[in-house]
Image (cartoon, rainbow, N blue to C red; front, side, top):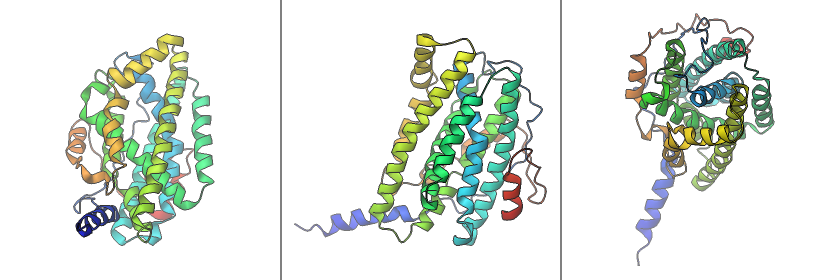
Length: 316
């Protein structure tokens, strides 16, 4: 029996993970939109749905701290990658810095609605602090995994209008804008990982990224659920009503967790790349819902109370 073709096919499949599938004509463009004045008029701003509102609110609390970590993670490798990828990392940093700024404002508005997000902020700070203690390559693969989770959620939010149906307009636009940029830069951390591990064995690359994703996806689901339940408690919903209502929302109703399970599992296949599916039509769909403001690299809006402004000055 000639097993050579089988071996060759397997080797080709694994080696494919060392090649970027990011479209050559992709342009990552930071859009300097400002939603700071977009106050949250009602606690249940997603069409009066307490579970959907708590879901997006809990996500937002993670963004300022989490995205500053992503910036730091990729910045460590910016001088070691090819020029094209270096430019994409710069654009990634600009986009993430603005996301941090805008969700910082969103979270302040949550406080104005009498939500106490202290426990949620402490939880994400603890997680990020622990990851920052790990080696640089571990920080990179963690960034890559979380960016994939964020990107598939972003594609789901844009692709399924039911998620933000009847949401307050300003907040809806904020989330559509953020989601479109998460899709746009979804391959940057992954391409950085591919370049920095190009001398690793394909099996090692696959094992490391998959083992990290297994742990991170479980932690993401657990921690976000805890955050949502805390916000629901503050909104007067607790006990079995909160647990069953949240399970219905995440898995049966609008089902953001169930509907993103397949693209999450795709991450585990050999040769995977985030751009295996070209989601650029979703970016255009989202952009049709808000006014795009293309950012001039030399005119980055200051980020109040956030250290990302220093990142931008040094890298851009």
